[in-house]
Amino acid sequence: MAEVINMPRLSDTMEEGTVAKWLKQVGDKVEEGDILAEIETDKATMEFESFHEGTLLHIGIAEGDGAPVDSLLAIIGDEGEDISSLLSGSSSEAEEETKEETKEETSGEAEVVSSKPGTEIPEGVEVVKMPRLSDTMEEGTVATWLKKVGDTVEEGDILAEIETDKATMEFESFYSGTLLYIGIQEGESSPVDAVLAVIGPAGTDVDAVLSAAPGTGGESEETTKVEKTEEKKAETPQETMAPSSNDGQRIFASPLAKRIATEKGINLSDVKGTGDHGRIVKKDVEGFVPSQKPVQPIAVQDNAGASTSTVVAPLVLPVGEESSEEVKNSQMRKTIAKRLSESKFTAPHYYLTIEVDMDNAKASRTQINDLPDTKVSFNDMVVKACAMALKKHPQVNTTWNGNTTRYNHHVNIGVAVAVEDGLVVPVVKSTDLLSLTQIGSAVKDLAGRARVKKLTPAEMDGSTFTVSNLGMFGILEFTSIINQPNSAILSVGAIIEKPVVKNGQIVVGNTMKLSLACDHRTVDGATGAQFLQTLRAFLENPVTMLA
Image 1 (cartoon, one colour):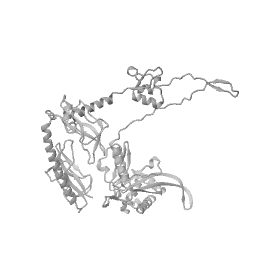
Image 2 (cartoon, one colour):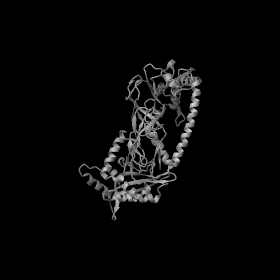
Image 3 (cartoon, rainbow, N blue to C red):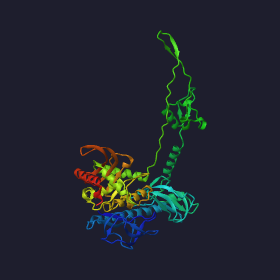
Image 4 (cartoon, rainbow, N blue to C red):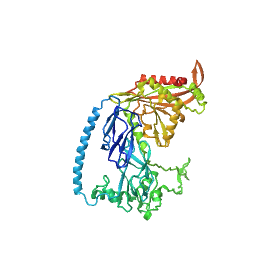
């Protein structure tokens, strides 16, 4: 399916770009990661690489021409593919954008006439926006600020580390001056183009700059007053009159203290307040220890009917403290939630499970690893077996595209890797062409860089099948959610020793369970079962993978 490539935003202030040079021509083959063109921004001339592979079908901006960000730059797809609908669609969109721009300019002129004097951003002051650091980035999270308000900033200095949906990347300043304002605190997220910081001469009125910057001001005075009033109400703790104490005096307590006391069954009249004017606050209730009251004897009757006094000890149960905390979701966690939810709710999943005899695989691995400078894991053997099985069952190596199904003739296997914030899936390209040792080296390299967030977006894109292995954690069997646009994902369990029947005898064997999750739109049950049978044959006879 053809992919439309738009003019990227390569700097925070870039509004349009000029194609300095095309490194690919119409009809050329394009691989993921190839440099398509050199694009001149308002800051520098930068190389722009392709995130897709196929044939370059159309060039929308000729060498030397400029165009706004998000304009049609190129189209990549299959050779001979009809792209007329994409071209007509982009032209109609351009006409609509032109009309909208005309309306905005007209309305903008009216706003200029009615605006108050002194609302322009002072000369030498720059408002830095949240940049778009990847083609799929919609919002970013500030992981770390490397400069503080008041620090001097030179052009090229690293301002902050920004977490995108792909990786954590350094963001450098294109300006020199003093860091006057930070708009997004560490750990906070904001959409692309939100105000990230303000840089300019020391002593600049930041409030005036923010009110003049687009998207940061424009509220009416009445709205501002209402918001300030509501903020003051929220900041000022309201005093709540608790029930009267035993001597008839009223008890002052904060709403939070009153709620905690109710939850713990504490009588506020027994609590001594340490707040202003003896007011009871949260820490007073949380630190309250009930005093031991003298036990009152109660009258009971013996068998003869005589009344006697007996001391009955009260039942005292320990009271634990309930607590919780809200932790902001990282950009990676939100992306995982979004994409897996889309997969689960759009692709009709079904699951197939088989058990594999791993005796021969264990013996073969031992022999291979006895060779000098060679290290192969069971996971590498599974990845290699999957690559070979996919070539025999191309229906599993597909992508559902609505009206069409794309059969991938190449095999790119994604290997799920657990990282601190969640899960990433680096991709081993052309897996079917690699040997066991080459797969082992590639997986080790990708997994290591994934754990320190050093993978590039291109190294996490383009998979046609995915393997998820939890066997090293002792998990015997599990199922996974399909990593779209794949049609299937394999879940690998642990290898265990257990009694098995061989040649009519019960012996100790090594087995492993494999579960295949399939998209029923592209892979039928019989097709998935045949794929697993082929996969088992390769794993139970590893010599077939060395041929």
